Length: 435
Image 1 (spheres, rainbow, N blue to C red):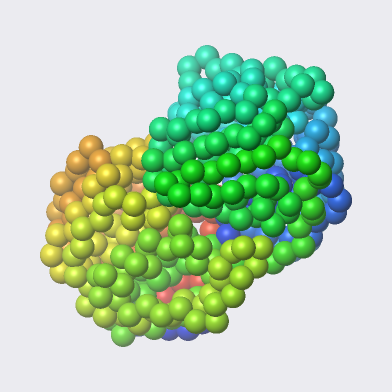
Image 2: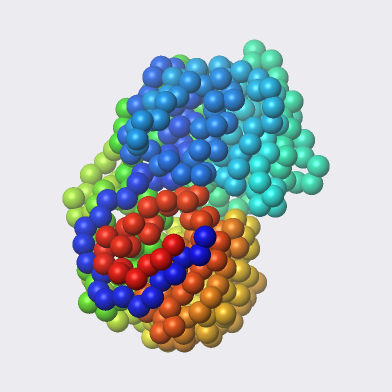
């Protein structure tokens, strides 16, 4: 699919987005590990969450999805059945990594595999610590497919005191799930903060998880079954970021995105847009299962270049493709460092992002751990998504201001995470959009 976007007038309106992708993954999997029936409203139905649901079905979990309401009949920590074939995790690294932790806890023998893109993603970062716990994972080359040998559930996994080499919510979540079947207290230490959705949700379900100083987390083995979920998920801030950046680069724009998750480990993009000069306010704040939710309003204002590095990088790791678009229309040169993890996403997001932006006329310099973008140099043209959903949507937004407009090839990949992307742009006033 080609997605064509050309210059637009001011974007205005109020929208509500689908549920958060990270929370949708976790809610489905944690509900399966609970004892009883969970009801999860505003569940994101997209390519990556379908991979999670498909895998759960192969493991014997009964679930039903009606519109945006997911009902899951949980089987407890050790209730998975051995699947008759390899579990297809599609293009979802969240599915394969978190599922590996859950399968290690349950003792279920299984093979985890996925797309060619997923097979390129590094899995050593979960294989090593899970094997230290006794999970018995084999990988030919440090990536998928992963083969778990299974174990007698009467024998607990070993508890460990482990320092994660990178701040990664996916790795951390896999180890937390395995630790629920541990022999004692497991202690995890991250080099920096990462999103803490798993700790919050599992804690609300009855798990004994303590988050201490210096990014240390203590997990006790389950002493009783996890409680089922009854919750409405907040909107995805990563999806909201596309709409917020769109409004920030089109003069005269003002939009509100309702009921968005504003977990502080995910709001780096809001802080950075404010630092660039956009007028951002948050109202109607509230809590659900430990997760902050609010309404985000953004008024366009002239953007200025900023420097992004350190802990802020982790707090907006998924938003760098769309942030780069804001940088491309800001005054001055924006610099990003400490972001080498971007090279291990659905694509090498530093290389592909920089390559495609250059095709659109953007003047930039690529670094091993980031890039520098000179604002005001995007003229537009044709580009390619490279099988990366976030890159597809980010490049499309350049057409709102680029003199020559934008045509993005392979844009159908956006359905992996945000199928309503184009509908929401039109709803906000993007009048010239062709798919």
